[in-house]
Image (cartoon, rainbow, N blue to C red; front, side, top):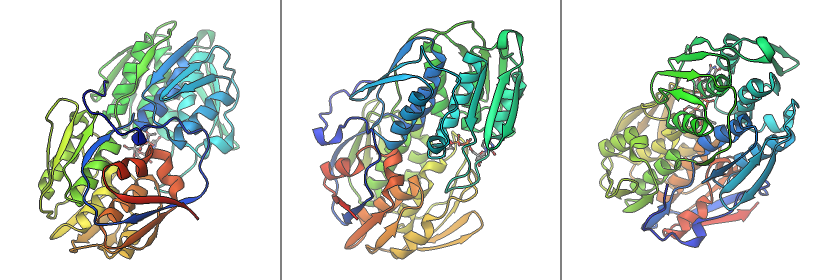
Length: 443
Ligand code: UD1
């Protein structure tokens, strides 16, 4: 994807982080109008799955538009630990997997990055065996991997879980997996990706029914196809994979991050600012754009990969999170910050994750009026939020607090930035370049 006509300030571009930063906080002085253009980075969730997918390639491959994030640095460490050689330059990563071995990914790394479990599918199908520690739960819920494991078993893997480690071995001829028909009880993004990757080198045809349709699943399928895999139907409920004997090298660019783009759309709406975002794929944001319109903010696409915000008066609306193309759970917290200052009563129902409303308490500390019952948040719009010290509870919650801070009176101090740095490339530099008053300080 080209960055076309927009000249982004150099502050908005960075190189890939190699280590987690020290504990810091963001100080935000709210009420500043924003204007200008924001460069949207490569999609974190695509990049993580595709980096694991690089293990399918028997030689080396080049990935472009990789965002500079702590999660990416962690995935790089995991790939290195299992024998891949990674070279990074700007937003490009070259991954050489000629010498990967059937080594166990270290638990301390896996426990910090759930997406590292993605390594199991490629390792199993390429080497005939794989050992990956169970990723465990996280701040937003239990997050089991039963659908991944059942899918791999259906493809002919013997899977044992012992002492917290998933030990999978292909039972088929020459240690090869065998294609199968797999129905997913729930359209899990991760399980769809694990099964799709595992099936690329399996013997025969695989059919995944009730597959996840998220754009990141399509991006992974396109990456696998660029390696020579035969995959049809990604982006629909049924994905067909015809196993091949061998894959080859590729040079592949990751799609723009729809969740980062959605976050900046909300930042524009809440500050009533006419921001421009690029590059974006507007079709990936259909539900968020429709919801913004209902709330009173118009979004237009003057060119195919650009979005412009036309701000307006904010009014209440109801949101239910759903698998794609429904409203994304990864934008729920950010929209809650917006609805907290939209006139009238809104209801947000979180249906994807069991425990993803923890940001309510922090928003209420800033003067929001939100009550939680089960997985429903009842929001009574207030005219304005007030700055306060707040603590990020998970990745998207941290973005919601930053957004709330942009619109609040006085100073907001957001702590717990290790969450934010997992998934937002250089967020404070991007915000500063469009007029926000925001500083990162050591605590
Ligand atoms: C991915 C995204 C995450 C996003 C989520 C939903 C990555 C790295 N992360 O997470 O940002 O919020 O999709 O769009 O791509 N489940 C099971 N058993 C399983 C797998 C999932 O019960 O084996 C449940 C989960 O607990 C959750 C629901 O299914 O309640 C959705 O999870 P899933 O779609 O798998 O999300 P992830 O792939 O983990």
